[in-house]
Length: 248
Image (tube, rainbow, N blue to C red; front, side, top):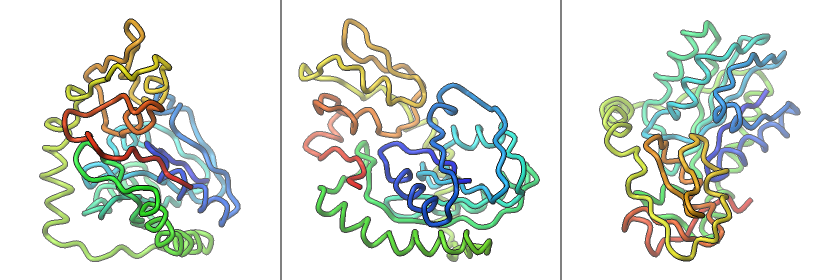
């Protein structure tokens, strides 16, 4: 069973391609994460967790959901992580999750997809994004084949900087950078409420027709990239940048 979390669609695309290749169910975890729904999920086939990379680890909200949810049936579990560059030493941390849940870790695969972190990095235009996805598709297919054959996915070598990113940098990243203080909305806002509906953290409320952000943000970029009027900015970091959602 393929379980995925996505902010702007990259992980959803990879998850659905994998589920089609292995002929297995594909479940979007958005509502479960949003509602803190930890009800049991059963699968006779291996579990496949497809997720974006936040601070060179899996998102903490997803980590906590996995640790609190009974995944019954098959004891094998794969992790597939989409990223704009690389996943650092994420393998160490998802392996620990598997140990805590007494499940068999079957590997952590890296898939480079178009960058969506508009609050910090550049975001590709559609043509470039499609090119990046085209290069990712054979990698996704190879991962799917390993899963279909129930084979372990070997992880790439990890260097000292990978270890630092996933440990020291991640520890700083969450308390220092993951806040919503810099989000603003312009007069272009149509009061459609889409930003609030896209927020997995329930962190956005409409006040007098305009979004207001509270203090519980995971920087998924769904609100800013999903705004149909492009009315949301993240300080000066997002100005002039294209908004990204997976074009496939």
